[in-house]
Amino acid sequence: MRIGPFGIPEIIIILLVVMLIFGAKRLPEIGSSLGKSIRTFKSAVTGEDDTLGDEASKTTSSSRDDAP
Image 1 (cartoon, rainbow, N blue to C red):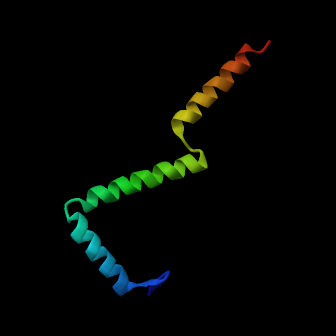
Image 2: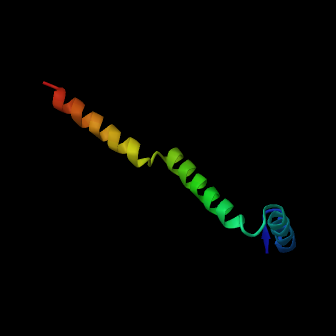
């Protein structure tokens, strides 16, 4: 099985080097922060930010109420 230019042995070697550099205790912390950053980036790109959507709907509804 190949993932791009990397095979299983190459991926195992990369994971072992990462574990040696960061240590087994820090890997879950790094993974969770990476997941949060990916979710934040994804929501920013797609425009699914809840706080901005709520503020935008409030301003559009208030501007409609002000119209004569």
